[in-house]
Image (cartoon, rainbow, N blue to C red; front, side, top):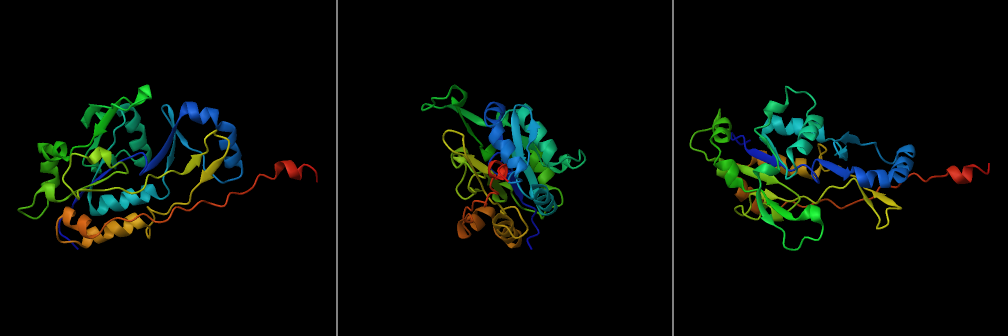
Length: 250
């Protein structure tokens, strides 16, 4: 096992959580309630203006990461949206300082989105790793109890489902798992597909990939180049049917 405790920077939405804005949730509430009653879907947590579902095994996954790596969270959402989610992921307030940092939209580089149609999507956000590497406090904390003569630039991994957000970073400093969605609604929001997911389980794809990184003695970019991350197949659950109408004839 490598003696270096590397830095893993995690995205939130699409990696650790699935969130739906309150307006859509209320609109589709009868459909959601049906799935809750059939036990096809767990109820979400309410966080601000969003319904939030935590990814299966996410808390255990974070605990494992914190044991073996330095861990940070970097999301392009606003601070008031990220704070309650971090609290949900790490409910013990004494655990949160174990994160090297947790950053929000204010720490992203911003550009106008020339193709935006939706007025809420007029900006593009980029996560420049130089912002991390040039922060003295982060470097000092990361270097504590590390081998000598190492550089944070060589040992940082960003995990984000959005490739565009890491556009400005050196090659092979990020991996991009498929965007995690617990479910997908059809175009008119009248039906729902719910997906199985074991990516963060002990024998899941991401855990296995990171276990390989633990054993790696080179740099992060060398490992990423030689060991591309490959998503497992997407698998829909077999939903329990709603037999309430037919059972009424019995």
